[in-house]
Image (cartoon, rainbow, N blue to C red; front, top):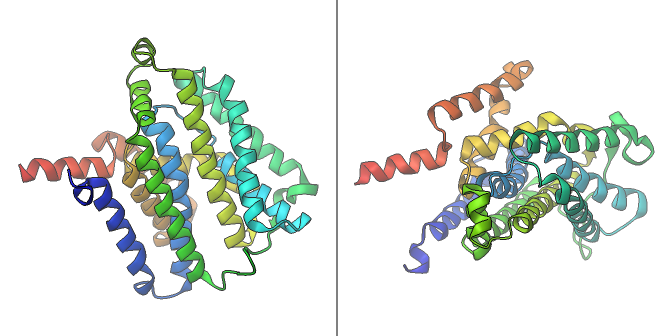
Length: 314
């Protein structure tokens, strides 16, 4: 098949076109800020979908890695004067090493035991962020200095939009290349049956740990972007509800669908902004979206719509 005719290439081109024209359709900087948050959540969800959708390993504490990347970068820049780009990369390295240490024992668990293990991990990270007030500011949060690299600083929300949009495209491209590589085939075999994959010669433990670390690094980088673009952090960025938000985005958009993760992030990030009158029922909205998806669209929104389109085309 011609490279330009591949569905993945067409999807990236479509996403790039949407990113390119969207700023000209948004009426003011508030909506541009919402679009930036969509992009940040989408980067996390692309990585999380590799873990949940392709490898079949649930994580209910991934917001912890998002918050660690954000706080690590924010503390190094604001309290120690590190260059933001170096701080972001160092934070990603730290989160990668930490996730590797955590994954070695926790990835031996399966099913609801794995879910509870990752939930406990996320709760521990949230407690640390709340209790270490001298470093993180505790429940009151902390201010974070802006981003700069080689003397250049993003001057407004639109510049941040192009940065986040560009990194989202890179994240999608990396994810698509990963799942179309031998690593991706190994992950799908692990998802299908760990026993069968092991018999076929797949190092199940290695690939489960690998994809856990990759997804954590995606979350860390997104967290650093959020820290410097928003200028303020609170421990709520790593709490249980944020982890559930991220999982719901992946499930709603479509597990084992990179573009589904992006669509899910876009829908569930913008939905609360459109339904501000129901702000007190935000958890109810997320729960209802998850239940409806699981009942009527078990594969998620994007895979279900694509399947329906293909059937109608035939």
